[in-house]
Amino acid sequence: MSVTPLDSGELDPGRQAPLPSTQPAPGTPEAADAAFDELLSPLHELHVEAGALFTDFAGWQMPVRYSSDLAEHRAVRTAAGLFDLSHMGEILVVGPEAAQALDYALAGKLSAIAEGQAKYSLLLARHGGILDDLVVYRTGDDRYLVVANASNRAVVAEELRDRCSIFDCVVEDESDDIALIALQGPIAEEILRNVEGFDLPGLDGLKYYHSIAADFRGHPVLVARTGYTGEDGFEFYLAPERAADLWEALIETGGGSGLVPAGLAARDTLRLEAGMPLYGHELSTSIFPVQAGLGRVVALSKEGDFVGRAAIEEGPAPDARVLVGLIAEGKRAGRAGYPIVVPDGAQIVGEVTSGALSPTLGVPISMAYVDPQYAAIGTELHLDVRGTRVPASIVALPFYKREKTS
Amino acid sequence: MTEPATDLKYTADHEWIAVDGDIATVGITAYAAEKLGDVVYVDLPKVGSKVSGGTVVGEIESTKSVGELFAPVAGEVVEVNQAVIDQPDLVNADPFGDAWMIKVRFTELPPLLTAAEYAALTV
Image (cartoon, rainbow over all chains, first blue to last red; front, side):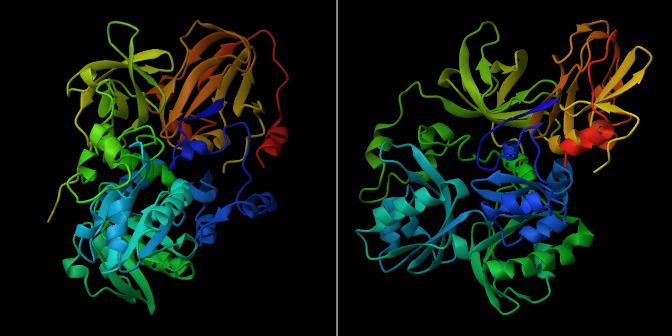
């Protein structure tokens, strides 16, 4: 048999070496050699001990899965999963004019968020395309933490430096000095409350897309109620040398209640079910935010200019494709790059950007860009799955939404 | 990972072959199953179809990858494993046993690898 890597996006475990080429087993001398020119997470040894399969991911060796993608996915939906996201980029913007600088540099109105609040935003190109999607945390009156995709870290840091240079603030790429762990799932809060030595004074009132400064065994941790799975959960930003301690404490606390370490494969199917875009798949420099359903992320009402404003106001061509969700018949998933055709002909009217057999729903789900006249909910189309036509219909995103308990 | 069984023959494409008279039973190895991850879909050829060695005869799809099943020998497909089509996770649970894929009646066997030769490929 041979294996075709399905996708090439940021979180894409399909990037693992295709069979029959072989990857060195963890712990072998070959693995040590391979590791020499790879970036390793501060949690790498723990992942090796846990039996993780690794993938190269934006130059990092990151866990694809520990045992089973599906088991890890289900654990996050029903209990909790623990993700190492230390490869992601963290860029600090600090100074008296940090808020104004980010209003100019990014699509959103970051000056409008309060200290302790977070906002999903976009770094736009001048021509209106998307250079990266970001989560921005306001951690002080004059301090912001911008979290970028690993593959775009350098671009984001460079653009922010350039765009913020006319303001009174400094831009520092702190990625090498910040590890990131995500605890996601319905029992995430319960686990967090029981971790020994975690001092979380603000946890009671901590709402979604907010963060607090906390202390784990004498060391500072930024605890944010954010995530990329469609579940409740937390993300922890801390010094790399403290990461293993926190990881082990979380596993120790939650392991008996169903918490498992989860890899990038589960992360990808979780975000797909939750209808969340992935840079390199749903988002790129040739996609305008409005095409991706992210028009609301661009604050056209904010005062003053911002990078990309003129192009966004003009908008994409009227026939530009738009992002939709598709549910197909059978069990075969439409995957990134597969064409979408009209049911009664050969006309190609779209292309899949992400797809999988949904572990939660049991049906093949895909996100895709289609011509706008085919984007209405209920429209019947065909996926071309490696030469076989599979009927599929357009559905509203997200595919999965958790039941909110509070 | 499960060691390759010594009573089977192997291909460099990570398939195993059990020979009984002129019938070859074909499956994928534990190494391949582990690389694929959780298998969610298996597509196999029809009974009676003629296959030539090295051609694609089926698909094994996991949550994150699509694998192609090659016919390691030329001949006629005499049986396909409906159980693995109905329950694709058998590929992960028992790749060398319950998750056999097809049985092919052949006239000539191509050169195949021993368990030791195959194991050397996957170190």
